[in-house]
Amino acid sequence: MGVAGYIAPRHLKAIKNSGNNLIAAIDPFDSVGLMDSYFPDCSYFNEFELFDRHLSRLKSANKGIDFLSVCTPDYLHDAHVRYGLKLGANVITEKPMVLNPKNLDELAIAEKESGCRVFTILQLRYHDIILALKKSIDEGPANKIYDLDLTYITSRGSWFYTSWKGNPQKSGGIATNIGIHFYDMFQWIFGDVKQNIVHIKTHDRVAGYLEFDRARVRYFLSINSDTLPKELQESGQRIYRSINVGGEEIDFTDGFADLHTESYKRIMSGEGFGIEDARPSIQIVNDIRNATPIGLKGDYHPFASLALAKHPFGW
Amino acid sequence: MRAIKDTGNNLIAAYDVFDSVGIVDSFFPKCSFYSEYELFERHIAKKRKVLMDGESDPVYPKGKLDYVSICTPNYLHDAHIRFGLRAGADVICEKPLVLNPWNIDALESVEKETGGHVYNILQLRLHDAIIALKKRVAENPSDKIFDVDLTYITSRGNWYYTSWKGDPRKSGGVATNIGVHFYDMLSWVFGAVKNNIVHVYSHDRVAGFLEFERARVRYFLSINVDTLPADVRLSGKRTYRSLMMEGQEIEFSDGFTELHTDSYRKILAGEGFGLQEARNCIQIVHDIRNSSPVGLKGDYHPFAKLELTRHPFGW
Image 1 (cartoon, rainbow over the protein chains, first blue to last red):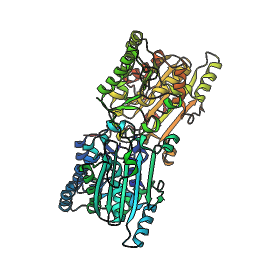
Image 2: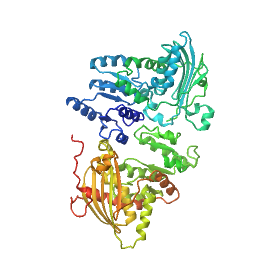
Image 3: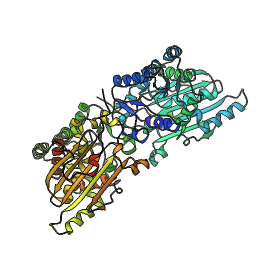
Image 4: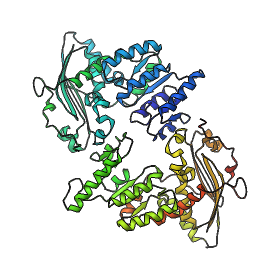
């Protein structure tokens, strides 16, 4: 579901490269010719009723689908995951699996009722550099608390605010939309959250402090190109990704290409990430979304003090 | 977008009902984007007022919108061309410029009223192999009539029929949607149409005979993978393009990548293809669309007798 969207090509590729077949696809937007490069025989619908009708007919004929892949706008994930379960299919959904932790409780019930499983894509957990980092932390002294700075700036033009991504009701806001996989990675490596403080939170950025069992993390996430370090702005680069552990930079710019395929392969072999794996990061972004920013107090990320920008739309 | 950028121009505002437009960032990160026509129109109208009031606007250094580029579904071209002209701009429109010949007459009067110009992308006329072909024909004795077979099969999956392209009221059908630039090329190279006969016409193919001043052309256009020659199918290819003249293949598979940029360059240099240049091909596809197929009679393309297929949607 959501085959015309930005992330869909990675799913098409992963489905194909894991030796599977795409039976049917849906998207309200019909610019989907890319499907021909992967699954030229796939059925395509731009109305949900017809998609549902097609899949239920297949099911009645004992040719029902095994998996439903969901890469729709974030606020629709919950509805589409439930749809897949009701249809008797296992579900693979993009992150965030849902927007709120309470959705997970209800999904767990739906999962049990259906006898099927829900999986989410948490591809950073398959990234070689991240795996190596986790290993070194696991093997390090158990009582050591690490100090980390995460800076992630991925510039977006003003289209972002016109699209569903710019609507916090639909995307969950910046922390959820561009940050969820980082929060998941932190809790996966450094353990439970002990403290979650938000310093700055606007339409284009979020800066805060997260304390885990084994780390103190200052983070800054932004989609505003004006927050890029000067030298990057001048070089024309629009993305900046930096994780600094105890003064040491971890470079993980590369190695993302086939992580969706890896995720699919693991799911097929019964090692996918389920509802409870998704829960900690969804709790974190939910708490950030509902927090009241305290401003520039305490231990904040250095970029938190950058000048704020007005929303580009001034109707 | 690439042609606009490569010709040194700037995209100021864009509109699409579909909001998965992050690709804009790769070309014009400062571009305004609208998913609702009213807001796009309002934006352009406000900027236009700035021009008329004589104030300068930092986003529009010349104080004005120079061009509106249109690559919307075919049936909307006419409406969007009118929008561009009334906004005080010249217009660059994808092929087919419009669906019916009388639309061109009406657009002519709007051109006159507004003082703007409409240009059509007819990129095959800029293709080296086609230019060479035109030259070759012109150098032959003027009473020489060439025998030509055109075969163009570009396989499309089921999504095609769900999308606007599969709706003949919106796309004009297969001849218009995948063939209009070939008909333009044929009439550009071989002169005026003397006879237009359609042998087979269905949702997935069209076969016919076109007599031009200097050529007798049998053509076959199809989006059905089953109509590919067996050896092409076996090789896994999904596209087949062949132009045979007097039993000799005219090779023009390559050389397409830069043709949009070339088209923009020509338009900016005052050498664009205007309304009248589009008339022949629009007349041809209109006549094909409204003709009654005669079946396998007379001089038809050998592929015309391939077995017909049912429409994939059997509600």
